[in-house]
Length: 311
Image 1: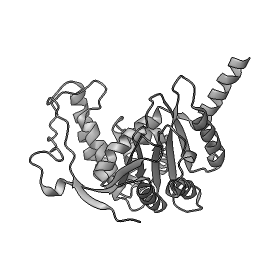
Image 2: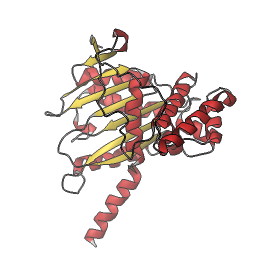
Image 3: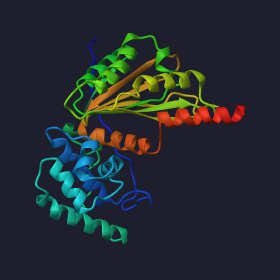
Image 4: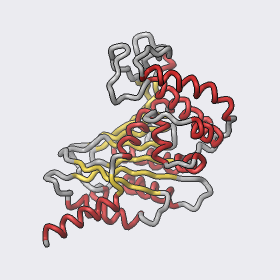
């Protein structure tokens, strides 16, 4: 591994009008309670996956994801089961849940919340300890080597996106090929750990039809991975004639962001190891994931449309 530059970078908040909230945005107390649930899960030694929590709570994984991202507020029964699954006494959370429930009710009636204002990260009054340390990767090889190394050490969950104009088979660096294989190998490894890999694949559809090369790769990828129980892929129909911002979220702590474009081999990026930084990207990923089709369903739908057009 070549030497990487380690620098400090700050991220500033976006200025908003105090008290202003869009109609679709969850109330502040609900978001704050979700943050407390995420923190509890992070402090848990085994860091249970959403699937494991869903089994304990007797609900769907999408429901657990919605609780953790603040899109839904859990009832007390689900909260107690979640807390117990994370190894804590639910009775210690009863008052916390009741307080949040009351604050959410007040917010729904337009009453002012008594929650304290959180400071902006990287604002003018920020102290040095609020800065985030980023590892910068100068090229394709550096980025994929670092991402593969961390993916191989993952404990429970990997969330990745691939939204580029060309399939992975058209990139010639050994590091990128090893990165993709590492994730599949990790998902398929015989282990006592509860593992989960979720990949969002952006398939270009410039004229309403999937790109031939990407569709061919997606079909082969489905055949290669459909037997791996811990691996899922959903499809994002991608209409822009440009690469998307790609990311790899490993467990609940490390975010890799990749920037590409121009020539096929051009790629660089950075990684940040910070749980709070992670929550922003995890929330975005889970929101996107919930709206997309499974890869197998997408392939069948496209094949069916082609058959109908020929008939």
